[in-house]
Length: 612
Image (cartoon, rainbow, N blue to C red):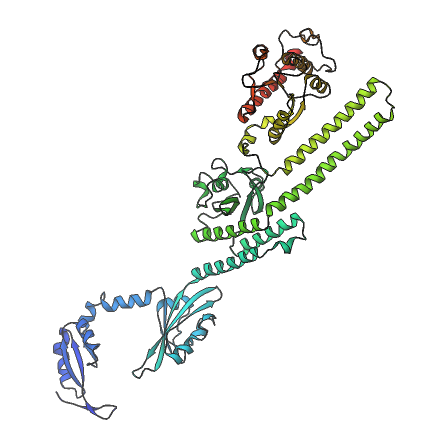
């Protein structure tokens, strides 16, 4: 082998190259042997040649076309596909920050051809540096260390991580940059949401009582509602939301607090804490865990909140394990919410529940309702009270001319007293903080026939009347009481009742005799006759021309084991249903009243036809 050349250092040297492949073994060797510049070694496999080249002992590889053809699906093609098709954008920059090389992903991002030789950052559209390195290329060039930073590209907004690695020469000097770009828009958008929602929750928590004590109760509620709506729409990007809270008056009732974008029917829909027939909201409240619905057409619990709704997420409002309410979000798109949306909602819902508790929102609502109720009852009672004062002034003046005038004046006083009683009952109903433990909202729904019914109860034990008033008030009943039969009969002369109740032992008369007098009164009521005069004896009442005795909605009360006068056998024979026992068992009391009211209403519907 002959031939030499003078290298850059001025020394005589002859470099060695690798010849690979059988086609070059014969064709290539003579060329090298007659070259004054090269020595050579031969190997049959290109992979071996590449490994030998990495040792630094060889200047290059001379390979035949047959080897490259055999590697079309081999190492070169594979590495090329990795680099070109990798999700990251890869760019090689010179120290002047001009693009030397880039892969396909980078070109697709910038949607521009022929960017070789152009400056890097202008090509990206001058992105905003979000840190932590605000001059990444300068840092890599001056320190020789790896750099990472976040870029924000605009129109459209995209977030890109920029990882920059230095390329060194033999002396360790930085001569190029290798930049890897990765689109993290989705991850960064979610991070931004979390950061903003943390700030929003902090702002909710910073709402102190001192900031809003000067405001009215309704204004306090509105402040919270406005902030919740703002954060839900602007940060979480929820367009359709509904928040319900557990009622103070009825613990199982979910009352609307805030609704945006919901239909009127949905907002005014009555929902309870129940897994059955109360939609996803009721289910969520009952189980106290979140619910994600992907398609309304396939969900058995969904009740329509908006026309065309397809998906929703619902989270309970909980404070230290106690249910405060529910937070519901809806969309017209199927599968509009992912697990991250649900986690964001749950986090925000916790903050809302905390704020409602901290600000005593329920107390504010309760007091606001109280103020309105006071105004309402005062407005309803003012005129009756004034009329009562006028009538009693006439009585005290001695200007009553005769007995009928006296009875008329007393009847007027009684009439207005009852109006005040009705107004007061409505007032108490609005102020009631919750149902008693033994009464459920479901029971209140299951006994609608009790609402607005008037009940006369006769018992010498006044505590029985108080207990009956306390229980039946929650079902909308008005209970008036008398301690003996004589007083009760006087009350019958001035008012009609839907149910009559009597103890089987009255202090002034036989309980069965009282029943017969009530039956006579009820007969006159059905016939439309004046009730002022009761017949004596009742069996000879001239107004009761029917052969059969009409049904009377009459209920006897008794203590266990007490009926020495054998009232019940005669009463049952006369059509009175079995008695209820004292102290009251709630379901027995309700079912008994339901039965007698239903039977009497049926009688009233057909009675005019039979007496025509």
